[in-house]
Length: 396
Image (cartoon, rainbow, N blue to C red; front, side, top):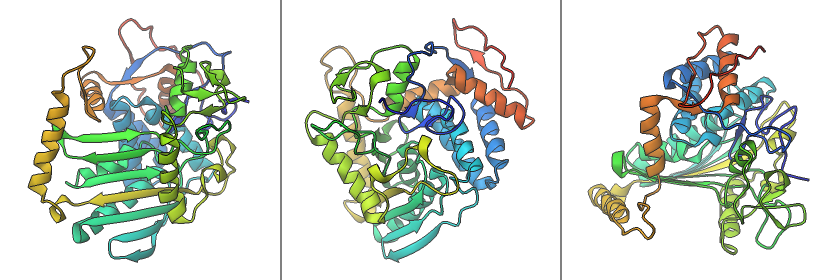
C-alpha cells in the first residue's frame, strides 16, 4: 500500500486541499495534475482564517496566532505548511480532536525547565505557548528548555523557533510526528519526519533552518503527485523497500542521507519530544486521517531557547552571526548558483508575496472562497498568476 492518500478525508481534514508537515495534496495517479497558481492578498487570507477559526470557538488571540502562522508560512513559500492546512485544522476543531479553548498548564518546573500540558490545543497555539515559556525562562536563567505534551500538529517548526529569535534569542524547535519514514536499511515507516528548526538574528542576517529529518517531507511527495511529476531518486520507498520515483507508490519516506544520519537525527527528535514528555512514540501516533474524534493526538514538542548575553555576550554573538552569514553568502559558487544561507529563499518569497500576493493552488483558492462565503465575508480577489485561467466558480 502507498502512503495514505486523500479520499473522503485528507491527512489533515475533510477538505481535499488540506495537509501539513509534509502531508499535503493527493498522490492518486487518477487525478489530473493541478499546476495552477492564484494570488490572494495576505490581509484577505488572514481575515478568512480568523473568521473561520472563531466560528469554531477559538478565542481572538489564538485565532490571530494560527492565522498569522499560516499566512506567514504561505508567504515564505512553504506551501505544504501554510494556508493549505486551514481546512484540516477546522476539521480537527469540528471533530473535537483539537480543543478550541484549551487550558495549557505547567505540569512540572524547575528553574530553566518546564513541562507543559497542552490540553489538546491546536499545535500552533501549544507550540507558541511553549516557545514563550522558553523565552521567559531564558531571560532569567540564560537557557529555557520546555517540553509540551498532549498537543496536535505543529505547523511549520520555524513558526516557533522564530518566536524565540524575535525576542533577540536563539530558538530551537522540534516536534514528534506519526511514522512516515523508514529507518536506514528498513522497509516500513517507523519514524516521523520529525522536523528541526533553529532561528537567530533578524532582517537580512536572520538565520532560519527548518528541515525534516527525512529526505523530503510527505507534502513534497504529494505535491509531485498533484503536478504529475516523478520523485527524485532516494526520496521514497515502495511496499517492498525499493526506491520509487512514482508518488503513488511511495509507501515510506527515506531518511535524510546518506547512510544512518537522518535516522539518527530523527531518533534524537523522538527522544527529546516524546521521550522527555512520556508521550506516544512516532509509530504509536495515529496518522491524521486515522485519528478518531474527541481527543488530541498526543503530539509532543521540544523548545530550547538560549540568551547569548549569558554566554559570549549579545554583541559578540550578533557580530559572529553576521560574519557567518556574510562569509557563507560570499563563498565562491561551484556551478554558477549563489551560495545561500538557511532562510534566504523564504525571505525572498515573503518579500515577493508582500508585493504581489500569496500563491495558492486551485484547491486551496477554492477552499478559501468557500470559507469566505460560509462566514459572510466578501469573496477574496483571487487573481490568476500570469498565464493562468480565471479561477472556475465552484458551487458548494
